[in-house]
Structures are given as C-alpha cells and as structure tokens.
Image (cartoon, rainbow, N blue to C red; front, side):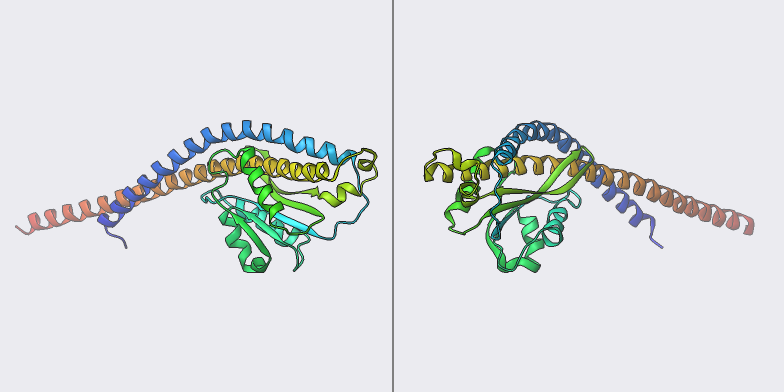
Length: 266
C-alpha cells in the first residue's frame, strides 16, 4: 500500500497535469474559432474546384493515381492522425506502384510501416498555425516539379462534421491529361499551358481546402481530448484525496489508540 507521502506527491503531480490540460483546452478553444473561419474560406476554393470538374466530366480512365495524405506534426489530439492513416491503408486503392506524398510527421510515421517504399516526398512544419494558400501552392508546385506521372490526385484528409466529431474523406482531382480528354473542356480553344496551369491551380485549391479543414478538425479534437483529460484528472484527484484522507485518519486513530493504551497502563 502506498504511503501518505507517496499519495501526497502523486496528488501534487495530477493537480499540475490538470492545470496544463485545462490551459491547453482553453488555447485549443480559441484556436478552433480561428480555424473554423479559415475553413469556411478554404471551402470556397474546394467548391470552385468541384464546380469546374462537375462541368468537365471525363470518361478517360485514371489508372495512375497519386495520393496525398493530409495530417500534421502535433499530437495530443486523439486519433485524428490514425483516422487518415487507416483511410489510406484500407479505404483507398493504393497499389504497390502508387506514389504517396505526406503532409505531417504523424501520418508519415504510421504509414511508413506498410507503404514506406511508396513515399515520394514528405512535408512538415505546414499548418503550424492556420494554413495559407501559399502553403498549399508550395506543396502543389513541388509535386508538379517532382516529375511523377499521374492521371489524377487523391487527397485523403479529415472532414469537419461538427465541433465534436470528424470523419476521414477522400477528394479526387483530375490531372492535365484528364482535363484535355474531356469533351466539354475541349470545346474551348485553350493552349497547352493554360490546361497545365489550370490543373496545377486546381490541385493547390484542393490541397488548401483539405489543409484548412484538417486544421479545424485537429483543433476540435485537441480541445475534446484536453477536456476529457481534465475530467479524468479531476476524478483521479478526488480518488487520491479520499485515499489520502482515509490513510491520514487511520494514522491519527492508531496514534490515539497508542496514547490511550499507554495511559491505561499507567
């Protein structure tokens, strides 16, 4: 059985942890409000992409898919990183030849166990604060410059459902050749450079929308995780305090018994 001193030290430790988790919850709540505003702006980019591709359907098959997994570098936010990793492993049609680009160190570590040979490029330090379109454009530019051939890009990310829930989602973006193969798109007299620029811009739009939505999910998950941690710490403090009080009461009772016994012997 733990001594009173050990229980007292553990109580002090848990109280300190409770202060930290409550502070992190308050910070995450503040960041969540900003992240939701940025997510609404980012969704406009995603809607613009969806409208373009809805009006230029292509029957051309896209066997060569490039995968982008969107997560982050930070932890203490529940299973949000595992969500996109599981979706990539089980829900996506990743083949042994499919190139994978990963944004965030957390998913990189998880997917390295099964798809390490498919990694083409990984990114970190993106979205440490609120993601910007410049971040997304930089990623899209590096992907295009890497020289990997693809027919479409599949983005795996976390979709914001509400302040307390999220879900993994997949967004597919057509490549340059798929746009050229669309009968609706070929009606316009576009130069090759225009099609190439449109494909790259659409990719940057989609990455930006996924980054902002994933960032909002991360802050929401972190707030909920810290809230649960604070509640668990409060319960643990109550349990340890009761254990400490019982031990202290038992020690006082034993001392009184010794005093009374000694007095009776006299």
